[in-house]
Length: 251
Image 1 (spheres, rainbow, N blue to C red):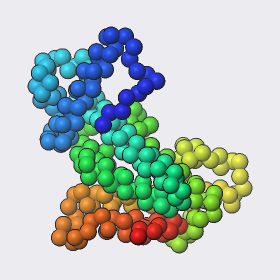
Image 2 (cartoon, one colour):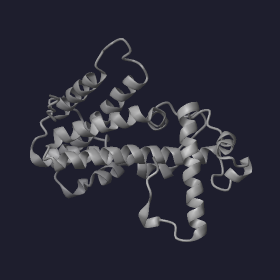
Image 3 (cartoon, rainbow, N blue to C red):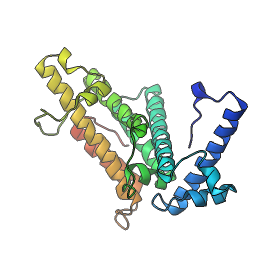
Image 4 (tube, rainbow, N blue to C red):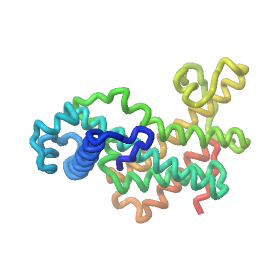
């Protein structure tokens, strides 16, 4: 799932050799993640898989937590890439924001079903004793950026018509979130700021809904409940989106 970073591609022979070993190490770590889970991830086991001495692995990652961070960043980037690609393709077909959101949600579900352990690592139960560093933030916000773009596009097109309740917004949005969404609350009137706050908070519903729907499926909560998991997923996404103001056609 590692995506090559072309602007920072290694140029020297040593850099290329190190990048190749890192790619092999991360591939082996992802394989171990799939079979053993994050809590049981072992640098010693990964070293054996690669035919390396355990001490050699520490030339590339200095701890199990450092390796977990790399896997988390890799997972967030892979999920974000899938969602960004789905949004771009939907807009290319001329889809409106509601259908773009459905395409994004379906893409995230497809990625999660193909990589359940990676999904669990980034959106499931935290690994005991692990504390994610700030290195993970940029990758983690890729999905958020897609969601904010959908709601912003719908707001700009005048198609965001929430059916959900009104609620107070004071204190719900941090300055960092305003900046991430591309808004300066000081630049508009109080009413304009409130509308932006409502839009951002409602985008939280989209985020929470898609993760909840995927988690319910992946973790077996729909076992013997439905024979059409994809259909239930689409219905869930459409229902939550309607509350936000996006009318999704799942036909």
